[in-house]
Length: 262
Image (cartoon, rainbow, N blue to C red; front, side, top):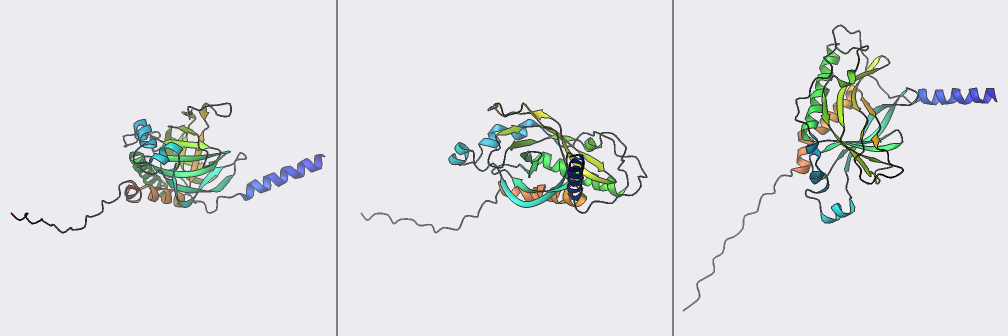
């Protein structure tokens, strides 16, 4: 029995080790101190950017509001990096998503045992883009520091919005967490990081199977993954989806009826 148990343990370790994140970013010796931790975001971020009126109402049709359909649109497949229970990094497929009739966009992914739709509104999207730009600058200048504490908070914080549940059709829970942008070393490789601390579950339909608190999440991105996310979340990409160009009115022929004969 001991030999069988040992064999199973070896197999599990081998499987986890094979779940690699693909190409990682190489990083040389640090030659300068890291950026100051916990700097405030330049964005004006507030829970009001994710008001119920925006999320549930807006320009939605009656059927969309009544049935709660179209929680988000899947735009394109994407990848990001997660950490397994065993500490290994894995490449996880997800989707870039957009919430119809709003300025909110983000990504959808399976995290642990639940599915999460992570959204940022306009101001917060631009804060993330600035954080990614700063990460690239610190990476190239070798300012990333492996042994520094709380580096996942290095580029500030904003309020986000999440919907989560068993799968894409059952996202019955929601939260408005304060999330942090920064970076984190996994082994010798640094990753851009979105850190979501434990947050209150705002769902009013809490039952026996609904937790009061949303679990902590850490989403890791290689430079290529971070740039792809930032490019998707830019105003040029998202604004046309909720602010469509007003179609030009075609010229009409004016006509004046003749005066009635006397």
